[in-house]
Every structure is written in C-alpha cells, then in structure tokens.
Length: 440
Image (cartoon, rainbow, N blue to C red):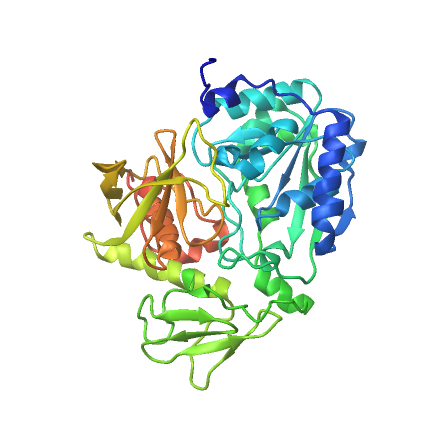
C-alpha cells in the first residue's frame, strides 16, 4: 500500500504554471455564466488585461466571499492563476477544482516561500496572477490595509499591475450574515502600475497608492447610489457581531440584531434598517450613520482604553480547531474541533489556555507575530497561523468583532508594522504608536 502524502507536501510538490485555456475557460464559464449569473454583475473595462501580451498581476479590493467570480469575469478570456488561502485547499468543496485550475496557496498573514516560488514560475511563463493584497474580505464594509510590503513583490517581478475595483459586493454578502442579497454590483478593470511605474515608484509609494485606491465605505456608496437590496427581511441579522457596543449607554454585548432591527437590551437604544442599508433610529436613540461608522467609533474607544489601562485584557470561552494533513474538511467547515478553553488578549499578546486533542494545551503569541485576525467565512469565528499551523477560534459569545479590533490596535500600540490608514491619523492624535515613537 502506498504511503499517504500530507496535504501540505502535495501542495509544495505541485507543478505551478498557467492552466490550460480549456480548463481555465471552463472554470470561468462555471464561475461567471453559471454561478455568477444570479448576481447580474456589471463589468467595466477601462484597460483590458487581455491586451497585455506578457506576464502581469491583477489585484482586487476584497469585499466578500464571491469576489473571485468578478475577477474571473473581468479578466476573461485571459488565463489566470488565483492566489487563495492555503486552508481552503483542505476543504472538499475547493480541493479538486483548485488543483485543476492551478490555484496558488498562501498562508494568510504569514511568511510563505511556496507562494513566491509558485508565483515566480507562473510569471516566468508569461502568466497572469490574481490576488487580494488585503488578504481578507471586508469585515464591516470598508477596506483593510494591504499586507505590508505587498509592493516589494511587484518591484521584484517588474511586470504591470492591473486593478479590478469592486463595488457593492460586501452588501451582497456581508460578513455577519451568510444570506446572499441582490442589488447592484460592479467590477472595473484598469491599469494601476505600468512596468515603468513599478520600476520608478518606491515600495512605500506603491503601497500608499494601493491603499488609497482601495479606500471604501460600502454603506456611504450605497447611500449615494440609492440601490435597493433584496434582504429577506434579515438585514440586521447578527449585526451585533461587529456593532457590539451600545452608542448610548456604552455597555458592550447588549446589542442584538434580528430581522430588520438592532436593539440594546440594557437601555432600549436601537434602530431599524431599510433595504437601502440606512438606519432609522428609535425615538431618542443614539445610532451612528452606518455599521461602518459604528465600528470605527468602537475602534477609537479601544485605542484610548488600552492606553489608559496597562492591565487591560479581554477574554472569552472558546473552542479551537485545526486542520488534518490527511483528511479534507467537509460540510462547509474550515477545521476539525480539537479542544476548548479560554482565549485572551492583553498587552503581551493573545493567549489560549485549555485542551487540545484531549490533553492540556496552551499557546502565547506576541504582537511581533500577530497583527490582525482572519474571519475566513463569517464573523462567528476567527483564524490565524501560529508558527505556520492553522488555528480556528470559536468564541462562545458574539465577541469576534472586538477580538479583531483589539488585536489590530494592540499591535499598533506595541509594534505598528501593520499601520493604520493615513486618513485615520486623527484616531491616534497625541497618542503613542508602537515603533514609530518608542525609540524617540
């Protein structure tokens, strides 16, 4: 009997190259014309990647779980290689098709030589590589900073970079609710950096340009466009995952989103939301302009709280999950549950104390090695890599939104490799920001 090969080793041994025109064409037909047809996507081609006769990159702002479909439509019929999260290759629903279409694996927010090596092989053969520099679909309708140093890769390969700019996809597939909602979505393709631009601009300049180009507030966009969405009457479902703090009484985890309303169980503060994603506050209520603004205020509150309290911590009970090197995950799961305990974030890092595979287990990860969290599917759990190993964390309560904000802001306070947007400098005015100020 032949010895089983670990999945990670199988991925490392694959021959990465542009897929065949037939396979890629069939894949894009299934993605766009079959699966994507119900979304009625609108494509706008300013600069066509099919006119590029050599290797190139196509990057996109990551708004939802189905963004790849729009990139397929905007690049067709050009053959492309997508970069996708390595954990997705362990899921039955993606494993075979990813192998067939020669998708390149990447460990999100973790140094990964395989990704660069595979990308180099595709680019050397004149291929087109597509990926989302943010590394994660939007949590609450805005963009995340791109992974620091993204443009170092562009400087290394010295090929054109195209931008597929997405609009509306978050409102179609929010992170708090798995319902698919139908309204209006757009994908616009244009040339972001020519080969000459890549050679001329610095890494920092290019990173800044990408972040600015990705700048996004889906709720503000929809308010301007006045697009009505089919929401199944559940537009506020689980909205408290990110809108967890009452803007009126300031209590946390008292908000509850059900059907078309969100209400505070402590003081009654709340609002309904219509099919245009606009809040209608109850009489006397205090409600932000949108969920985006709500979360930004929560972020600012945390920025101050962690600086005022050197003993600050936040914790919740949880289960943890890992991948199996010899078994794919099915039934829309992302890992196998292996233990339970408590997850805690404080000024030293993130800590777990509990069990794993029936034995006592703990880990500690500092902010040099952790700067943001992954919400791979929805906001009911988060993920990260610890020394290259994938972990899911399933908190007992609706605390994922706070954990995500807290890890980012603790990192910025103590390290600040994953910097805030320059347009958010006002949030940190007069406050210390990690390595920027500690050596001065």
